[in-house]
Length: 494
Image (cartoon, rainbow, N blue to C red; front, side, top):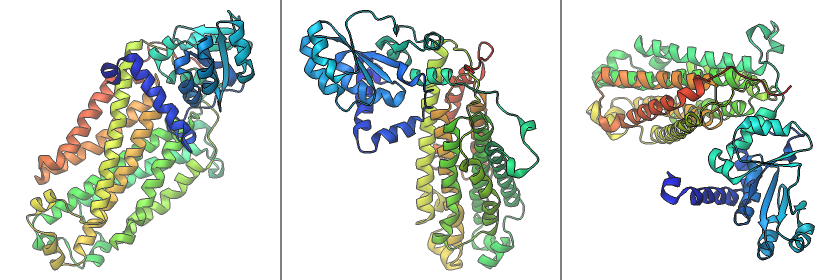
């Protein structure tokens, strides 16, 4: 879209400048490095992979591209009039800088400020005009060569090109399987604990759904409310269906979270992807923190506490340990058109994650304050004051369900967004299936329960419809790239 509005060159310049500006802010470099979460390049590659940029882009490129994995930047051609600009650009640099000077005088004036000056062709500098990763890795196998991407490569492939090259050059081992898990729990790998926690979350969500569709209220609900199901019907004939819709929505979100955690553990942490462990950790911190919503609602749910007590140790064991060594499998590059379609799908899925997070935050705030939105009260045909008058504990009881759902939605949103941002690689079908199954588990029961109880307000459900539409389009666009590689996989160099 930016390329359409601004033109490709201007859009690239704007993106580069924005990234350079962010990295120059206090803590900005760490924030950007965390956001992209690129693997560290092997020591023998770090200083031999970079890019060629013209003088006008030099300052922004030298500040921004090292965060993407470029260890060296070549600037040129540099003429006499460009010397002051280049000197300002290389100040406080975080990477090696090579200057391609047009004259010996320019070379002499800039030599004290940069790492290297060249005036002609150098056999150790390989300038790539083709974005094919295989060409870059083939050149990097010679330890005497430095590989530099030309501007055309970065325009065609984007700054993520450095990451793909680094991953292809990283030594890996074969991934472990279920048979490798020892019988002694003290020796279980982190990914196994993460998988168990994810499956446990799925089980907890299914259990919550069965309770909701069965008795709805357990003994501790009766003790807290001093009411049973018949009493709730007497207060308001739509109150039981409303509670069921709240709790089914919560249960569906729990199942979706469990699916995402199982996928991150099996497909990500098991293969040594550091970003998968980080996504698991960030989402889990939010998910388990929702237990403390009781400080506001005043209602402690024993089943919620029990689930937390069982799953929290598994979560900690899954994320506490250092990431496993790289064990990923790299697939050969496919058609560029499929990658570009997949990038559109990636952007849409990240958008879905952001939307879910905002929605979860709003639901949490409402649940901890007003509790009901206008469409809720329209469906119930009453006011919150009437429910409070019938039983002072009734509104806090609903608030507990509502706020808990908001927290769970934020946790699932973080898993969706980070998995989409960091996991989009050719042949990683587990990414597609994790998102597809989580979306099915999260969206379908929500729509079904609203239809069954006839809470069909379009205003209330439009975010759900929007999420379903965007997710369907995103996964449809990305499926050929994520799930259908054209040839057999290849391993990184041993």
